[in-house]
Amino acid sequence: MERAGNMKVSDTVRPVCISSEGADRSLKKVICAMLAMQRYPWEQGVCAQALYEAGYEDLWIPMAYDAIQRIDKDGRLAMLGGGEAVSDPAANGEVCFRAYEKTGDPLFRRGAEKMLAYLLHKAPRTPDGIICHNNISFVDGFSDCQLWIDGSYMVPPFLAVMGRLDEAVEQLRGYRKHLFDPAGSLFYHIKDIVQDRFVRKVRWATGNGWALMGLARVAEEAIRQNRTDLRDELQKFTGTLLAGMLKHQLPDGRFHDLIDEDDSFIDGTSAMMMAATVYRGVYHSYLPDAYRKNADHAFQTVTGSIDTYGLLRQVCGCPDFVSEGTSAEAQASYIMAYAWKKRLDPP
Image (cartoon, rainbow, N blue to C red):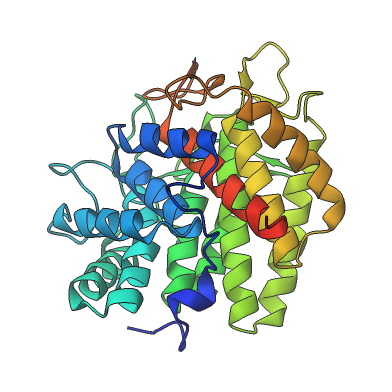
């Protein structure tokens, strides 16, 4: 396996130093509510990643451990009794690798390596080599060779962390080729690549948020690995997508669920994904500080939507993600936004 140089976990994430006693009350409640949720593979991964980015070592390492305990025989992490997910399990990959760096326990390294091997050698791909999202179609009349923009967060960041930066960028280029609409500077949601037709041709706000966060993490790996060619490409495209989203930002800082359709419900998850990307991009100096006002406005509004139990309300909801509800990724994206905002504005 190619390793990510000599990076240590401390080089990757500087903890935000939130103690259980001193944490903002809303953040603690958001974390507790998130941990109470049942989770699919991508949800386990994004929740663990959020806690990793926030510096909660006592939580993300056990979550990485459990993702390995529930590894499928083909190497997919956090699988509960098998399933159709191809790209989603990779969302657990970085925390497994970082847990190995932190603890030295080879169990975590083997888990990350098995996930990587699955992606490189077993996962179904499009004819041009982009890893498919699932191994079935949920809609009759379409092939199983589909790309979902969600996958741009699940797979490329893990590949980059595991020393496969060029492959990570090729995957992102594939999403851009097949799903990106240059006219609107936004991604469509789902496309059947074999049939060359869209399964869901909507500009889903949360999907574009997934893409933003995936681009940001790969851009940071390019910076860490001193790949200026890829850094510049990723930085430019991150800015393009961000600008495309912000054209549709509502006065309260959030977005419509279908970002350019005013009759769709208002969603806070995509707003927190945008905010988390802006804060980390400003922190790492690949996004301009001018975007902070957009992120701050969204963060303030969404903080006000947290209920008594720590659940983010007015977000795209599980399990179908076509109506308002609650979700693990809403909770996780808030934690990420909080953590990166805290680094920019330390107490």
